[in-house]
Length: 464
Image 1 (cartoon, rainbow, N blue to C red):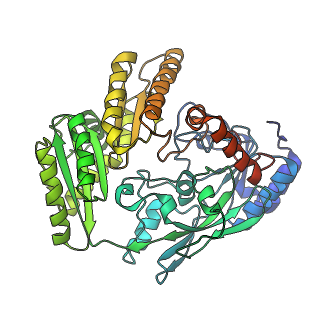
Image 2: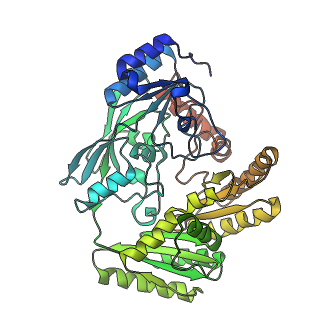
C-alpha cells in the first residue's frame, strides 16, 4: 500500500480542527500509542490526534480521504491482536475523549453513548437506574467503541449473548467523512442488509463508530455463584454440555485450573476461596428471587456431583462473590506477570469439543517444550490459551509460537471452530483467518472493505 506521508500542511490542518493541545508528533506521542496489549507489534503513528466530537472525526476523515492518508482509530488500546496499531503510520485518532453518556431512555430501554465511554462506566450508570447492560468482557477499562468493533463477548454470553445482540443503533463516520446513522431504537428491523451488523466486529476497517444506542434489560435482583472443584480439567469441562442439556442456563460458565489460580493469588496478594483441586468450574446464576435461583442451581449442583465433582461451594454473599470474580478478572494480568512475553490463541469451538481442544493444547506443552496456560468461557466454547516466552531467545520463541499456533488453529478447524471468539483478527491473526475462510470467503471480505473504503485508508493492514 502506498500512502501520503504527513507534512506541515497536514499538521496545520489537524491543528485547525483540534487545536495544538490535542495534536501530537514525534517524541510527544506516548509510547503506549505504538502498541496495544499484544507484545511484539510496535509502530508509531506519524501524528496522534485526540478527538472530542463526531464533527472533528468527520472533518479529519474527509481530509485524509482526499489526501490518501491512512487513519487508525483507537480507544483504550486494550486489544490483543494489534488492531489499534498504526502499521502504515499516518494519523492515529484517539476517540477516548468522546466519553459522554448522552441519553438514558427508560421507556425504550436504551442507552445512547459516545464511543469512548468505558464499559465499567456503562455498567455502573445503568445499575444505578435498576437496569442492566449484560455484555461482560474481562477488560472493564475498554471503551464501548472497542467492544463494538471486536463484537466482545465476555462471561455472561452463555445466557445473554454478545455485544452485537445489544447494539440497536450506531452513528458511523465513513472513510470519506460522511456521517451515517445506522439502526436506531427500534426492536425489529428488516430494512435491507444489516449494515449495523457489518460494522459490529469490523475492527475499525469499514467506518469509525462515534455513538451507539445500546439495548438494556431490567437488572436481576439476585446473583449466586457456584465454585465447583473437580479432580481434573477434562472431567470438569465434559460436565458443561450436560449442564446446558438440562435446560438450565447459567449466566456464566467458566473453567480454570490450579496453577492459574495460584498465579492470580500471587498477583493480587489475596487467597482464592479454594485452591486444593486441579480444576474448577465457576458458574453464576441470576434472577429476581433467591428461591428462583436456588431451584436452578440445586439441579446443576446435582449434575456436577454425579459427574465426579469433589464438592459444590456456594458463594451467596457479596464478599465471596467479589473474591472469586476479582481473581477470575485478574487471570490475564497474572499470567502476563509470570513471563517475559506472551501471545494468545482466542479460538472458539463447539461446546462439546472444549474438553478435547483444551487437552490437545495441554499436550502441546510437552511436544514443543513451552509453557501454555489457559482459562475461558466453557459455556460458549470460547477459549483463551496463552503461549509464554519465558527465557526463550527471540528466534526460538517466534519459531515455537508459529508452530504451536499452526497446530491449535488447525485443530480448531478440525473441530468445527473459528479463529476468534471475541478478540478479533487485527494484524496478528490474519494468516489464520485466511486458512479458516478460504479464498472465496476472503474475496467477499475484501469486496465489503472495498465498498466502504475504496482507497483502503481506514485501519489498513487489519482483518483482510
